[in-house]
Length: 128
Image (cartoon, rainbow, N blue to C red):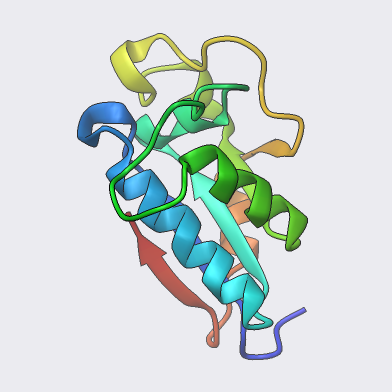
């Protein structure tokens, strides 16, 4: 699985910053995928809100594409989207309400063991 080019991006931020960190995380992931790296994006804590279908629509940070465009590109380029299962339903997600609405079809609910299994000595990690 690991060829020295794998990357794990962890997104822990919701809409508190109007989508800035989510935009950076997704644009980072798209750039890495375009350069031939295998990328997993892990949504946890407040970042789980981005797993809701349609939640990123209308989010636009000046100087970047719309967040929904980055999500589409990320998936089209072969990125893996994991969502912390406990956080998506309990206390970690924004306002403790869990993910509102349907989960994005590309998103996979996962536990921490799944995320840890993606990490090797050559995995690059970054958190937003």
